[in-house]
Length: 141
Image 1 (cartoon, rainbow, N blue to C red):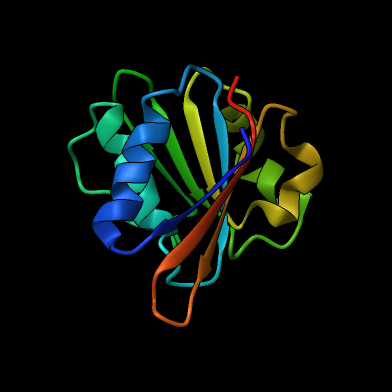
Image 2: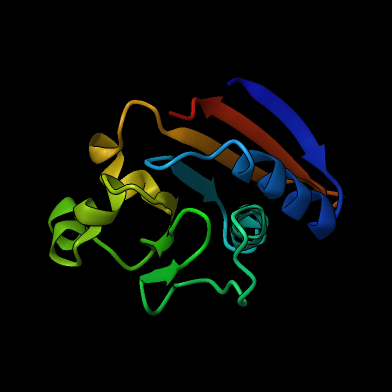
């Protein structure tokens, strides 16, 4: 999937997450990239809603991983505070990365070499008018 679009509001970003979430199957990995406040967690909320998850979706910045139960389990990771692939392995990241769940990873650049070949890369760029340009690359399993 190679696609670029503009999200003008948080609702647009969440709707895009829902659209992508509807295509998720067990083992899907989504890399969320963008600056702080770009909308990565809003996108994750949309994915969660499409998976039937109703609980509040929050950024796992301090907990590193949030696990949610839905039609497919969802693992939402924030690797902002991780400094190496070894740190990722020590928190059990590989178990979730190669699980039967949907794995959303914010700040995945630190484990780039560990990401499966079917990873969907979602790059979110904040524009001067506060809209977001979202580029989707790669593919879902």
